[in-house]
Length: 507
Image 1 (cartoon, rainbow, N blue to C red):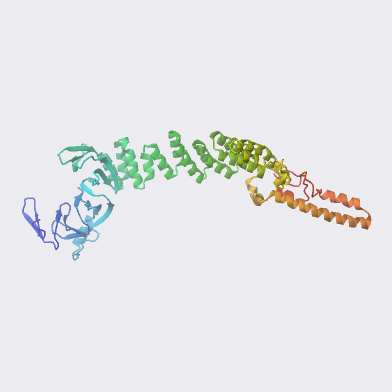
Image 2: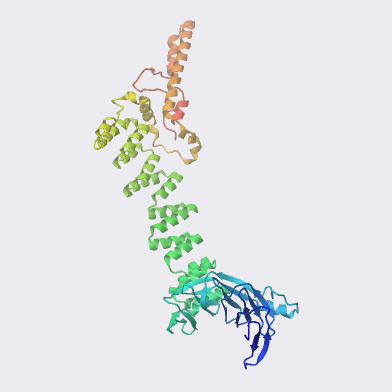
């Protein structure tokens, strides 16, 4: 460069061959496949023979690196570097066509392959692999847009070159100390072949790469979307498990989980198996992972009574009392639920549950609650009311007892899931209200039957026969009775409580 406005080109014997006067101030010039001149805002590429403009690219260039093949170039700017492919055939075709030269050059002369947001300090090409150190003084290499960190340098160093026969890259520091780092040529060649789509040659080269580098190869393949190939190459069990999960290869994932014996992997595999409809595998995985919540979801969805029963025992052994309680509750084992609450010092909850579901146990639980509460607050303990001592404080107490005895026989009946539609509306039933309504119906029926019998007696003198017929339809209870004996008239109320005409639970 004679000046910023005149560039001279010399041949091998140092004879001037060509000169060019750019229309801009050339701050830097770079050699390589093409002659490059750059100002502060752009770079222009020219052919060496005629100095014709090949392409102008608007970028602030700090350095330029051509690959030995002449097809790839790295342009380094302040904060990024760009990997471009030079389309030689497109340029030759354009120049031979004799078309007028455009101020921007040949439109398709370069193709942007990759952009990386790192500042390059120094760099070299080895095949299609660009080796560089960045502003954080990490030694990296880039193949196919994937950046891999080789080493973290402890001081500023600068790349000297790469010796293929030693598979080492050499750097030098400011004190002229030279350091060498290993970078396998076979690894670079393999990645280069993959990038070019020559998988047959790449697979033939794979055995020459040491096994400790296979995980790096697998991650490169995964980044290229070749997950199945990555699974075959990977060696690390955790990484292979992740790849198998991505591919949905549950069998391979299960084998790996059995090897590493990781609860987290069993749980992850169990969730995937359940979402895939492989329920047997899901059950096995959840057992291995001790995922009791997952098992509860599985068994309750399947209506598996035996599974829920086993899970209740396992949950109690593992101290998972919430899961155990839900299992027992779904099985209708209310007494066991109550005992579990007492055993875990949830006595107030036990008392409330007894009041709602097992009124016959309220007195027993109240006594336990009083005893426990007396340790911290004797006055509060004495204020707890026992229905046996104060029945007037408990609304519909005798009705509640009657409901409990009536439904006790059907709590252990588990209808099949196919009959859900028949039972879906019964979850909203209030049994106490149902018994109340039956009492009112009984009184109304008694009065109606009594009037009819009286009229019949006056008409034909057959009062006793009418009373017997009335008793066959229903047995009437005195409204003032407090013994809790409530008899049902008709079939509608029985169906509401879940019993059939024979007084037994439905099948």
